[in-house]
Image (cartoon, rainbow, N blue to C red; front, side):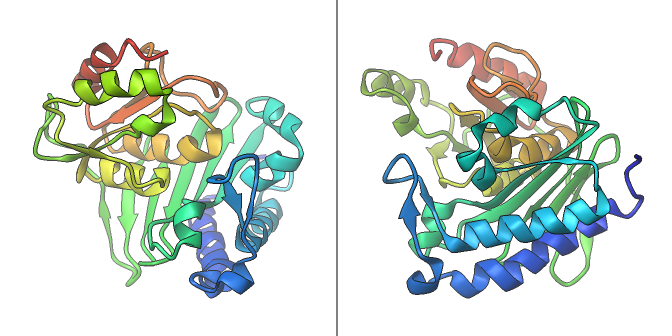
Length: 277
């Protein structure tokens, strides 16, 4: 099986359909959303997450019938699905609503992400913003493109910096770490600009890939949170790696991740935060 030449268009159509039919009708409609917690109070799921994931999975299964589908919500019920990443000829990784907590609180900071792997390599991705209708698409070897709701598009270019730019926003959440480590992390932020967290990897990666933000640092490596954004940043000319310096891969799921506009910035961050394990 080979990838269809118009697969990127199919990705965009699948994500925009899920946004229109499943996600936006439930946004700021708490009764329709039917919010409930997973393992932690801040880790929530809604009917919109489940419906959107099913719609996207069914749409892409028609295009890639032999692909393994890895959806965040499906994995919640079937954790063993993760063991198949990199073993199937093609794998589709879906995050139906990245930033679900924002979504349930009425904050317009969430997005839908899909990444497609050929074997062990991520070869295509799409990050779709249901609020704006914009999408960030990436294809291995062909670059990253920002597609606007009006149909126009521009190539995403790497940031023009070789060191950390203190005037830009950066993304890192100290609350992901144990209390004893937080003070040390915040101290290490000195000179890194305005460091914050949107609680939405999709938008953070989008801002980094398009040069608006300086870097994304995450202590968690769930593939649906990073596979799509990592390809977008890499294809825009940036660098994505684990904190120990090894290149990012969705097959590794338990190590801090750094994504930045240049290898120089990644080097700097890996050294600055080497004390995090």
